[in-house]
Amino acid sequence: MNFKIRAATKEDCKDISRMIMELAVYEKMSDQVKISHEELERDGFCQNPFFECLVAEVPEEHKSNEGFTVVGYAFYFYTYSTWEGRSVYLEDLYVMQEFRGNGIGKGLLSKVAEVGKQKQCVRLQLSVLDWNTTSRDFYAAKGAQDLTASEGWHFIRFDGQNLDNLANEACKD
Amino acid sequence: MNFKIRAATKEDCKDISRMIMELAVYEKMSDQVKISHEELERDGFCQNPFFECLVAEVPEEHKSNEGFTVVGYAFYFYTYSTWEGRSVYLEDLYVMQEFRGNGIGKGLLSKVAEVGKQKQCVRLQLSVLDWNTTSRDFYAAKGAQDLTASEGWHFIRFDGQNLDNLANEACKD
Image (cartoon, rainbow over the protein chains, first blue to last red):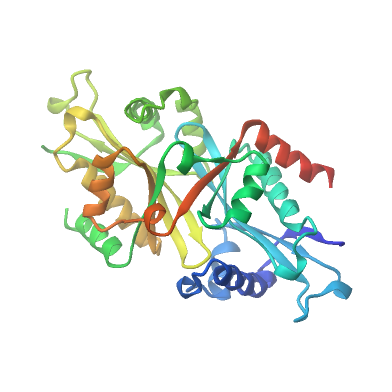
């Protein structure tokens, strides 16, 4: 199937927002999605954007059952390793179910790697859920290391009241 | 003990670089450190910096055995959740051994939370090694969740030749 990968524009945020929800449903965590397309427009298309995004688009004649032509996205930003320097982090990689098996996911991933290399990034990182063997196998087949399995890295998060409490302790000083 | 937490300047990069190595030795991974203080100066103190850093400083009369007054740092950057928006990621939090137990680590962590809140971040995230129970307990006591344990998130990385291969596939398209 013919498809094109291009940098997202502000006008794509509604499509991206729709697909963020589709991906969260697949990950069985849709109750955690709080973001709106307005926030994506504000945070991704400002002076110092918080993220960048690529979209995959198919021609009008191949549009989805529901009429969409933007059928996949790769959402990423730049991070930094104090051991090795510039890195790129792939937050989401998603292709709508009816368009899978056409190389779109692979195309999006490769393009993020290329963009990262152009920015002198030495790593491309991401996270997957342990039960998601389809994704884990996809990345492993391309040579990715699972650092949680090999080195024992765990993800830690503060949010909500715990984050407020931490921040408030600083204010008191 | 008296100490001050302040934003790092370009002139602190030699101290930060020294402490990055000290932390890596503690984490038993010092062979992975490739970064120089020149790279930190270039990437952290440019137009759109890749990271921000706080340092902890003690008065001259409390300097370390080796004569250092910059005795801890918190190295962080902004990331983005497609479910909840702006986040801050704490890459490194470190206090020199002889200065531990004085609330410096806690002070640095709280200040990062405060800076994150000011930027409207809804999460503060970080990673720890599974054997590092001192750190895991420190964060857990402040209410952090271990998402690897509770939800099964694994860290995945492409680097070196595998990253090059991915990027080269995009060039061919």
